[in-house]
View 1 (cartoon, rainbow, N blue to C red):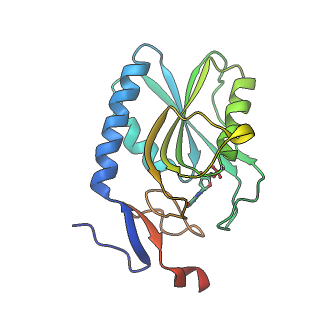
View 2: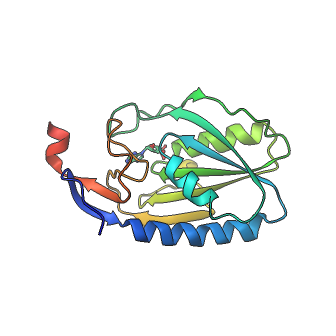
Length: 184
Ligand code: IMP
């Protein structure tokens, strides 16, 4: 049994559920990219656990790169601004890119990255998101996510790479914090 952190009010997705779903996503991605030599791009820092687990489930050639962007700071609400803090090392020209993302909330970060990667000449850009928040993304905010782990309610969650003020990333499950954690 996983030990639950005292600041966690509720576990949304257990360690076992995450492992099972990541295996399934790995199989699907392997099938789609078996002849493509895909480059996996993870957005730091939240996606590192998902990237590590998902990539170990791939049975096809791939390379990895990392990028750091900021749209949140230490707040719980999006500032609406995307800044590149660390750029990719690799050239994306004519490459098939799969963005490996922890969570899609407003979609602002991914919208920006897709546009940016296409401008660098990527042959294709798709998204594998561990979590998708159940909120409206229509019109300009519409975004096509090819691989989704779980759809979750529109609440702030932590664990499996996701933080609140840089804490809780190492929790092996996805959970919601107790309200008093925010007021402290
Ligand atoms: P978006 O641009 O609104 O889709 O937000 C993308 C980024 O915000 C994610 O990659 C996370 O780093 C962060 N984020 C969004 N929702 C949450 C959450 O519920 N918990 C922790 N971080 C979140």
